[in-house]
Image (tube, rainbow, N blue to C red; front, side, top):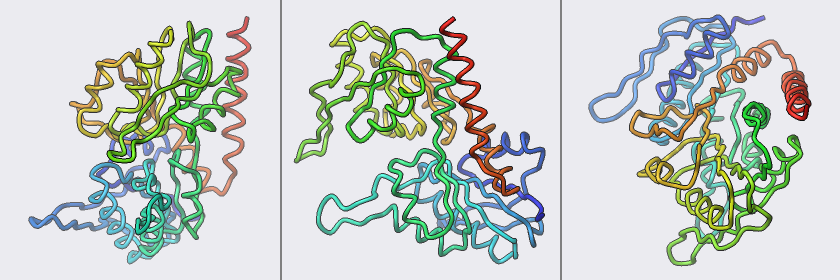
Length: 327
């Protein structure tokens, strides 16, 4: 088999280093820097000829900068004659622009997919895309991995009682239901609409019973924090006991972290798909690392073995935890 080579962009090097440790490989050295005018320079400092290369680079804020770094790094790799290039994009920027809501709007998620393909990527690995159909924008092989087993395992380990899972809007109902089905818990849905003038979310009602219950809001992205904090306030008003939030991607634009800190939320759990600066880390926040899962994914992609067995092991472990909890 081709040699496995692991590379990291500058967007989330900590995650790449943790994955490298678990795979018992070292990161291929690169020289990534900015010219005074802001242009990006990338050079691969070792030969990758004939190698199976995995490049970890989320396109998180600054999305444009990190996306350009990804494209330029892929171009540098393509000109170095590897056997295959896999772009591991834990957070896929522009995924929320997946369709035209109004006339003369772009479908930016597809444009980004085509740019990645044109740069020379052979395969893409993403986590918890905002909408699953973004996967269809790629004409190359793509894997969109869900993190439901990680969330379920973490929730069961806490031995919470009287749980109801909350979808922050109708679009997120399938995500909440998928986790609820594993734990055998009910779901409720936040009735969210957007005003025509400001596009600001308006939360007026909750579909489902939450009084006296432990509410767990399930989401993929928290950006401004407005929807989540308003939803938590409404849940508390309608008698929710404790409110937790599980979200994959901590974008946390502007003062979102402060909003979460002051909200009715007891704890918010993120993954490390996005590296958070110190000023955005709050006491209510807990981070679950995707490094073990990502390392296993890369190993199996390299070896050509199915990922299904990984999920089977996780769900078997979850089943045992669930039985022990009932005892």
